[in-house]
Amino acid sequence: MHRDEIFAYLWRLIPDDQAEDCLQETFLRAFRAYERTAPDSNYRAWLYKIATNVARTAHTRRRREMTREPYSPVAPGQLTPLETVTFHEDLNEVLQAVEALPHKQRAAMMMRKYQDMDYEDIGAALECSAATARAHVYQALKKLRVRLARGFERSMEAE
Amino acid sequence: MTDKPNPSNHDAAWLGDDDHLLVPEPLTEALDRLYTSGPSETSMAAARIKLGQALKAEDVEVVYYDHVPDSPLGAFFVGVSERGVVALSFEESEDRFQAWLQRRVRAAVVREPSKLCEVVSQVLDYLDGRRRVFTFAYDLRSLTPFQRSVLTKVQEVPRGEYLTYGELARRIGRPGAARAVGQALGSNPIPVLIPCHRVLASDGSLGGYSGRGGVRTKEALLRLEGALP
Image 1 (cartoon, rainbow over the protein chains, first blue to last red):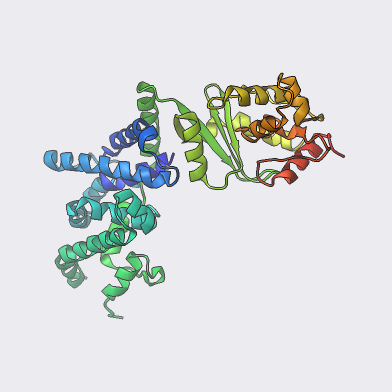
Image 2: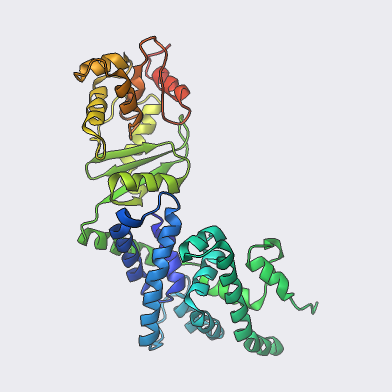
């Protein structure tokens, strides 16, 4: 049922300890809806669709409540993205920029870059065409570059 | 070298058009540092446990399966529910196997090798000729009463023996239903374990087999069991 893979996806969309809750929510929704809406094929993309919706809700809530309290540092190694920026301040700007992306663009970018999905499947998960899915990734990339351009120029000059 | 990375190449690589052009650039490096690792094993394990608890609390039944990549019959999937072994499949796509299993059992379907150790080892021992009988209960939900009676009856045929479709039809009290018996055997969700391969056509030919490799697999199983020379 792609449990670990969906968890990794949520972990990338919800950069803190809420990914666990989102995982439960995703699968409970999936099982409740299974008989009504599950597809005969591409069950994976269907799960991504539910996970993407769950993450959007969590993300909206999180933005509202965000206190940006740094997590108590745990042993370095595999940290959540939010913990990573407490160790690498320079990444904070990147994380903020990613977090500020429109949800579909962020989701499309993560699926393309880190979840090994092709554009057909990303489209199925986002309920759009493969071409639109590709455009979402392109837009995400473009926005990140524009937003981060100044920061990178500064750091490159410093080197 | 003071070459500035060419942004259009980066875009192409990102979009999947030209992965070989992917050269380090600050944005990609930063994103990779944030997102490549994925969750740690610890948080993954915690998430699995909590998900299991949540499904239990909601009374969602969980059916476990595993994939066996190598056996004398090739790769197969095998699944087990609380009631017993529920599936053995030579399906090649995990996605399709999951969808099929989920549709059949209407439960949460989870790949969990630790729940399948006993089943897998008995099946492999059997295929290697080191085991003669299985000790499992079978979960035959979702089958019609007729299919279930056929698949239950065929379990009485011992290893090394075989009978005909017509004979099996007689044994379930439906003489003349040889053809329907053949179809019911074709619906066997647990081939090998439930020995539908021990039923042959009345003219002595092997009849059909729905597992991978078709009749050749059937022949291999019968030979392994000593029913064929």
